[in-house]
Length: 99
Length: 164
Image (cartoon, rainbow over all chains, first blue to last red; front, side):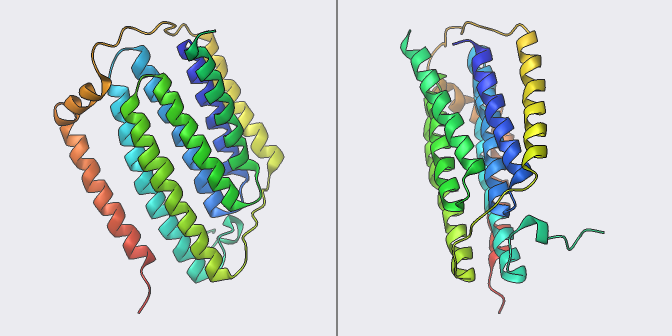
């Protein structure tokens, strides 16, 4: 399987994640879309790493995974606080900062 | 058809189908389960790329950790509101156009370039190489990552604490 196949697969997943982020109303749904996009990036990193025989890409994938875990933890904490305060996690209703 | 080609197509189909499920299913809980499937399929892709260590990390941290806390968050919010959250989508057409445009841009760029088609032989175990790099040239980013995780943990605790 050539490198391009892996990169195209990652591009498909990234596009689907972007679609989810753009269309979901629920804040948790948007977070899930972001997860998909970050996952696609990891596929790219590991594929390039393997096909160039350089381990640096795998390390970056490892770092991305750890950062994503931190991002999800903080993101969900914010979602729970929002829910407690505003009783909704519909992104459209959370427009307090809109000018 | 070699085992690698077969494995790649199986993983690709599962990954794309699960991703579609994540962005399209109306039930948020089901979306999280589809996300778990997509993350496991990504781990399979890592295995095909001979990154066994990353496969383990993916299963433990992502499919295990992330999915668990998302399920927790959904259950907490559902308990607070006392009903099942049904989520809907908006701007379906615009979102699809933009996502397809991004995909076509990336794919067009990829197809127009010459990229490596054959893998160089992997000298030694990738896990050993990752371990050596983490305590060698990448030691500082690795430590910073530890600091980031502590900061994120404290921040999440601070946000989610009960007011009293």
